[in-house]
Length: 320
Length: 320
Image (cartoon, rainbow over all chains, first blue to last red; front, top):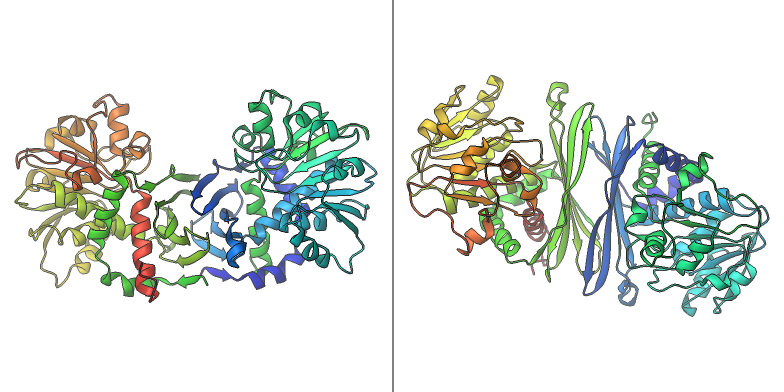
């Protein structure tokens, strides 16, 4: 029997899941070669502009496979609709039967992406984070900051808000929390005062330049997940002591690593995979003075891990 | 609001849809270049053996896009489960919002495939069909025969039943119909007595040989939709006067055309697309003595057309 799971149920169950841990395990399994992840399916629309990604795959020998759809139609807010939409389909790997339709509207993609940012920071941020810098004040910027609290003691944040109307919702979300958040419309202030930076925008032009980055900085680039999007000047990846990607195969066709290789700034050979950094099979940060970059394009194993966890939390007796 | 549509609702609405007509229109739009269909997504499982296809796309400028999942786990019947499973997701092309989840369990894929067989026969079968030959007595063989009644006056059929236990369900399905059906366990009898033949098995070795095919025969090969599956000896495609494929791009990597090109039997340049035959832009059958072959691997535009039709029949006011 297929479970149809509404967003309300998903939000209720999610706090029971240790998301950072399962996403970390997912990346490790991926880098061990235990995960089957075909190339990302993609539909691009021009009028109105929109994009849809289909990510799918499974952990070999485990119980399920997952197909995840997430879309972004960035003109939607102007007509009173959310820009993001999506759902996750969980199937049995033994019978092909559809176990669950998770009608998350893209929320699970958002939180598993935020959890990946936390995994990256856990393994790559300098020991003492002075201030967290968030570039982009949308849903993803907010979630990144929210999940970073699980992996750093730093409680100061500076947020670059490209659209002033986003300031209030962002600050309201964290009202009553232990975070001390300031906002800015001057992006330069972020690399000048923050040594753990997350970029979370749909930008198609670099937002940070190499000359702005101080030693001892870690940057997680979350926004770019297509060939067209870019947030970091390629020179930043060239100057970094370690460049990490969630998926080496995906970084050949999308994201910051793709763009830096395409521009000739790096040759790509030195890029290592986040799962290997997690397992200490690849070098991450060696000292607090190094510059590190982690490029996240989003891997289906994250969707697998979160869909499985939600389903098993909802349906008693399904824990395997 | 997302409509969750159960199989019972789908079965209720389906008779209101002129499936052969909309599938024919879909192939024509596809061959006119109006349809965006990225490469098929695929997951293959070994233990137990199973496969899942993800087909997706849209007609440019129309209202929706569709993502279709269909799987086959051929060991399922042994444990009392259906071998097929699937669902269709219908999204708005204007907002990306999920309009409907059609929980068809693979049924809509089955019927849109059968309707494609009818379209192929409508345009390629000889004028006088003496007897319809069906190779394979599973769900697809049964549906092919059912839908062929819409495009031919012939009411005699011979069915090759590879597994004797399938005979009774097959015949029961047509009880009370105007069809005169005989079954056989001798596959040679099919090409000897039938001039409209449909192959509908998951075979990975050729079932029909070139030496068996008489002039004036049309064969629609439905079963092979992967690189591994094959039902026709490549020599059949080499001897045919017209070889037609539902999708030329897909026939470069899967199906009978792929296998015949791979074996060197044909060079593939002469293969034409079904939509172009429908529009009379490409040659189909020129005389009743010719041999014609149509290779169907299944195109997302079929899924698009059927999902759209079901949705618009279910939700009043959504007709566009």
